[in-house]
Amino acid sequence: ETAWVRKLFTRSLATLTAAPPLGTLDTLSQRTGRYYVIVASAIDGDLIADYAKTLTPKGISAKIILPYDTVKFYRLAVADGDTYRTTQATADQLKAEYAGGAWVLKY
Image 1 (cartoon, rainbow, N blue to C red):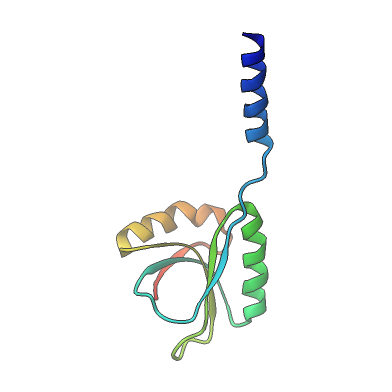
Image 2: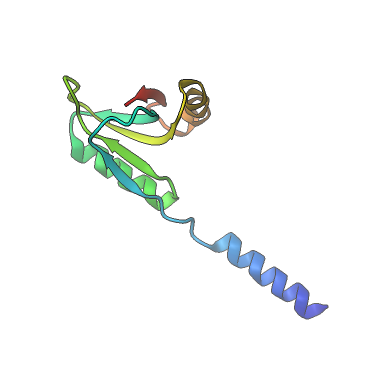
């Protein structure tokens, strides 16, 4: 019984101290028709990339949306969805975590 408890405790401790899985970073250059939760927007792509690189070690997968049409801003998305409604609900949940807020963009 003691060995079983020790094994369970060791496994639980390892789970608690394990680093979160790394997030991914993708770049979108073409419209997908999906809705994205945007947490940052900047005219400088390097600023957006630097911000994204601070999120991926925390396990957050991010997408950089390149400027398109007449829009000259790079956007950083941290979530996406099929419908505006569900994506807006996600954005509402994430607003407190991001200083600039979170809003939805269809791209």
